[in-house]
Length: 109
Image 1 (tube, one colour):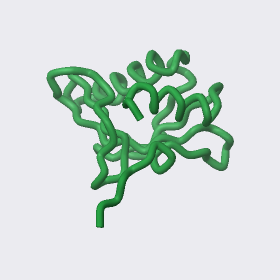
Image 2 (tube, one colour):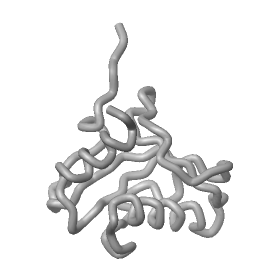
Image 3 (tube, helix red, strand yellow):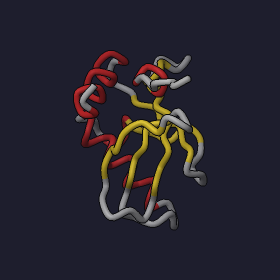
């Protein structure tokens, strides 16, 4: 049985009203990009060039997400997993539908 991941599985609405995205972060990569959905971990796969050292990879993640969604850095925060590859970020000042639409278009779904 093959389970296909859907963007709706990784992008949800948090109880606070913010958009929640579960992420698998790959630090020290050769590029900084959103590379797809990790179907095993059920997370958005994100690569950053910075190492996981002194918050550099987390800052790269925040910068990438704010640029991708056209938000100020202050609208992107790491809600959980600051010291882990598995993270949850919260986006404010953007709708759930717009986040899903942008990711769907980018990932070619």
